Image (cartoon, rainbow, N blue to C red; front, side):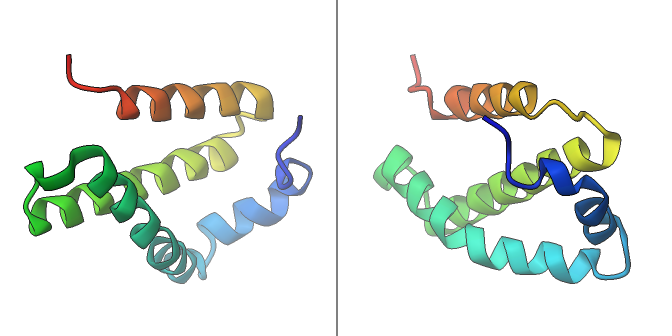
Length: 98
């Protein structure tokens, strides 16, 4: 399996580091934040205040964006390795408190 943008790394590197990077990042955050907020609510239910859920969703969303940006910009070109690393992070995040 290859990630759709792996073949267009130069294009995405320019998007993530160029003059439009801030606007792109804000747009992606606004798109993904509500999704991550719902995931946080499902995982933690009523154990979090509204503010804590919002803060955690913002942290996760920003961190995921940063993870992808680092992969594209730093040149970790192997999409399978990146996908494995991303799934490991998501799996650990989703683990129940033990």
